[in-house]
Picture 1 (cartoon, rainbow, N blue to C red):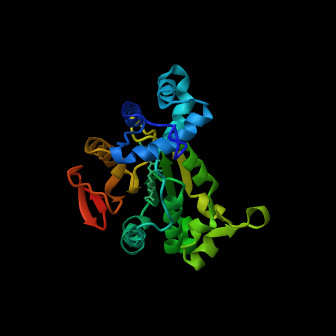
Picture 2 (picture 1 turned 90 degrees about the vertical axis):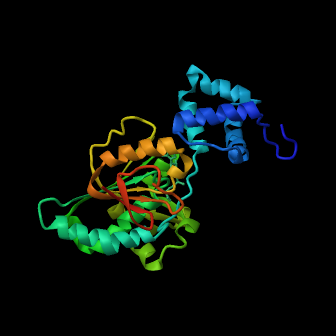
Length: 283
Ligand SMILES: C[S@@+](CC[C@H](N)C(=O)[O-])C[C@H]1O[C@@H](n2cnc3c(N)ncnc32)[C@H](O)[C@@H]1O
């Protein structure tokens, strides 16, 4: 035990073992700089099981009895930072370029099916922003189309949070006031300081837990856009390649992939052409 922090010490070999278990279960690559973070996040897991050392915890993770602990372990090591209207250029692109073209090319014919996947959706801010953008663009006409947004994440806690669609005041603080009033209900009494996404938005969203490492995603749709933003930054190149080969099969011809501002598909896949602002087009 570190007497300054009150946290259980993490030795070099324990850290290495944990990095391996994280990779095996999530494909997330943890470098040395994540050591303090891992130690502090997993200290709670040790306390929960009344374990004295990380070695004991690792032994438990490797045992047959670990199935439900692996879920909590994975939830503890994911980084879920997100925001409403994060990297807003992508939502502007939807409104000014993608949706006008989609309406022109599809909506007059039989194909009125619009499918968008928020892959690594965290607590739901991204998929709800996608749906608000669709409402802002289509207005009342939104019901004329067959629109569905899928949100998936590895972390079961964030998927549940997205499902509830309830957010603290500080999370919605930067949303334009008119948008906030239109799409959220403000809590009162016991729910003072909380905001809930309106059901009319929720009905467009399906959520499910999905681990990108699994060979079969069990998804039967092809998508017009996949948002996979601020996710691949945690993976190595080999796994990024594998994932984008997979994504390619889930995209309609000419469909788009949006990735985070600090991410790139350079050296990952040649099957996507760069458009702008980390938006890529399926070739
Ligand atoms: C930093 S958040 C990004 C959220 C959102 N896309 C955004 O840009 O605001 C990254 C998310 O990716 C998820 N993630 C990490 N590894 C994953 C994996 N192997 N399969 C599915 N999701 C994963 C994490 O649980 C986390 O919620």
